[in-house]
Length: 50
Image (cartoon, rainbow, N blue to C red; front, side, top):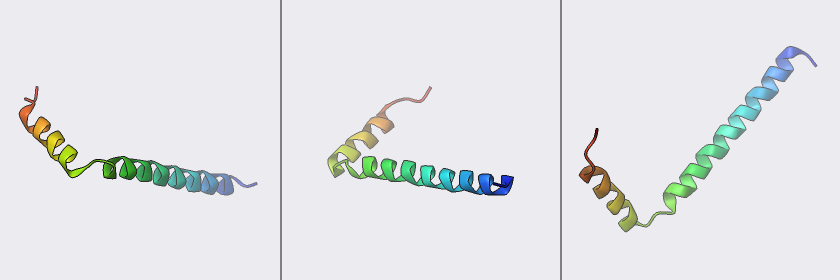
């Protein structure tokens, strides 16, 4: 195998891993109810930044 084939396979693996991470984060984000989202936003606003 030439070095460019290995580089290409590594690139494909990187793209696939990124897609998995994005899909996982999206599922986690969509799992919240609207009231949970409102509560989290209220907590962020109330928390003073250091």
